[in-house]
Length: 85
Image (cartoon, rainbow, N blue to C red; front, side):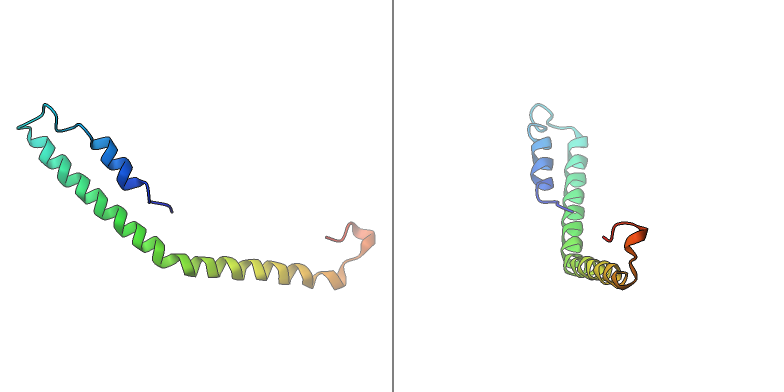
């Protein structure tokens, strides 16, 4: 999961919101909601980063298992049954 651009996109979406809206209490809430989302994005980024190495290892092991299983059928492949892959 790539969350790099999310914070900048969120900031861009909030640009200009303060202009002409002085005194609206909703803006204070919007600011706290934005901060909450930024914390959530950061938390998700950290979690994904901590899982990355393990997920790569699983993918590598899965690929190796696929190759092992595929090659295990080579000795019993019968050309008259079709193309040996």
